[in-house]
Image (cartoon, rainbow, N blue to C red; front, side, top):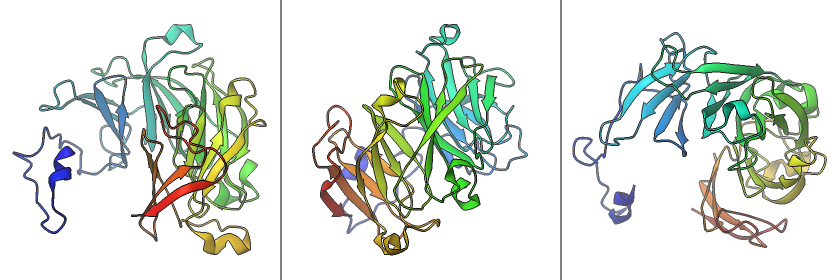
Length: 311
């Protein structure tokens, strides 16, 4: 990506896949996938949601080995639980001693949270499904993240359609973040929720750095919560708001709308700046007032944004 830094915007460049790319893997069935998941602990990535759903891998976890980036290969895939919308994979270090040191993936699979042991990736299937879990109001299990980088016990997840269906804890239309306890990977438990925003809306991608959860909530914008209390209070009752940035204020007068407007995701930088994507207005760069969590990871803090710049 550093090659982009030398490009003059007035003179766009078309890159040559044979000379400009480090490597290329082009074996998806129809060249289309919902997302690419990076396992930061290991030298591989995963394509998830690769279409069509009736192909061999069933749109599950498609492992891609990057130990030699110039020659990526795929050792196999995990098709047992069908379509995987998103996932997070780590070398597990948590309370379940049976799996410490193993490559564990949490899949967000539309109707369940699914736990995979992906340590062996060259079998058929290329992993073992350890467990599956539903939760109150489960409608479209979308995406989630471990609350701590190096201790794997709790996960926060978002459900993209429970507000639209007005079911479970999201019956009011306010976006809800769910808390899952993975103390026992073979028997995970739902422990509670907290509201992601004050107004009605739809929750989407969230990422957690140094006890702060950054979540894009469509029309409600990006919200940041202090979730460091979850290890002691997994009900979510002690979670607090650190800050937010509303990039779709036209719905504020009606208390928010449950529609796909505003922001669906964001990028976190070590400097503390956050690049917020939006549907209608391009991108905004924001940063929390107090600078909490700015080193080594990004942070807001202070319940107000001191810097914002439209890109």
